[in-house]
Length: 115
Image (tube, rainbow, N blue to C red; front, side, top):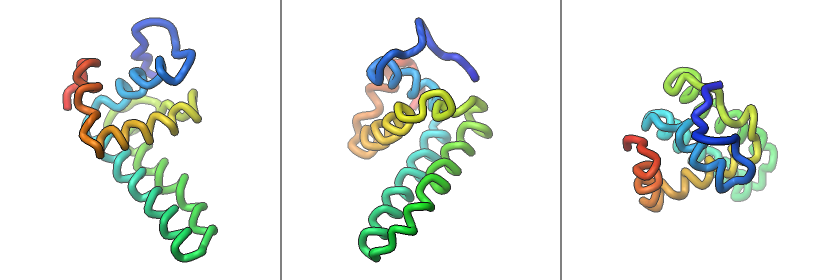
């Protein structure tokens, strides 16, 4: 795994999130995450609307497919999910909602990540 820690490994989500963003420095990797997360949310809504909880089984398949393509082929790093599964999931949704609300740019800029 590429280690982009500037200090010690994270001990809480607040210290994990900058690491998470550095692991998603390439805009195409982030875009693939956004596609996967959007589809996951769509699956949840479809499962609720159609009353088909079995659709929820597709969430990890769809979400991880797009994310892992971004990591293995674009970033060429190991997904944070392997080491920090819950923080990584939270990080994905935080990055997604910061992006769709237009608030991700300043966070990326503060870390020196090109948008």
